[in-house]
Length: 260
Image (cartoon, rainbow, N blue to C red; front, side, top):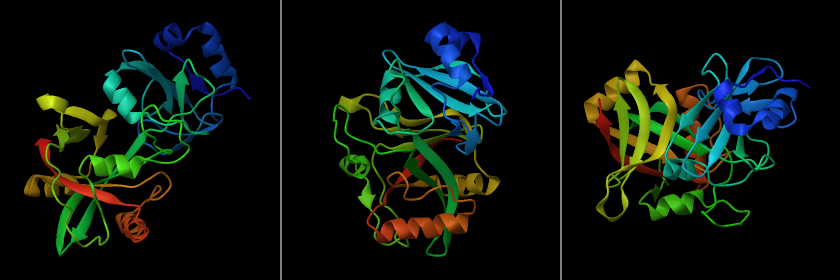
């Protein structure tokens, strides 16, 4: 079935006319997808959809988004960020690797919210990939997301009432009141790098901004794909985090705010 898809001239120039035409007739385009901008579901067969091509030094990743969220375009990102955000092959997601049009890649979805700990409200980010994450270079069918984070200083959450410990060198970048990135320590004393970076700045609520400006600290929780899910309210998000902690499927760290 043809898709309600927009492929910009810039994207077409990068992927070629043949690939662009296959996308337009629906050969390589998912009907359902998670918008790469707002992370909510979309349907390329029912609503206008943009193709967004993320290009690194060696890798290109094709994603899909609501046309109302972001126009079809080419976005240049660092190869390190692209490889860090896109690690494992999984079927049925909203990401295609170019030129391997038959594979699917997992990306990190980020949700902001407020969480009550010990009577105090704390700004939090919840990170959940769209599919299993494996170690770079591994062909394992498993999910290494939590072990990889544990190696980077994140600690298991067994009691959601306990404040996570600070993870040295990590920070959250907020600029002009919008969320831009989660920064991790550079290697061998180099500057911080983007562990996760928003494709476009993400809106956070006024309450979230007020809380983070008060504490200058963000709590980051992470769980494997499919553990948390899309939760429409903060109380439901809290319930999902508690269930993840009870399963031993949640890690966390506190980190300072970088920016304003």
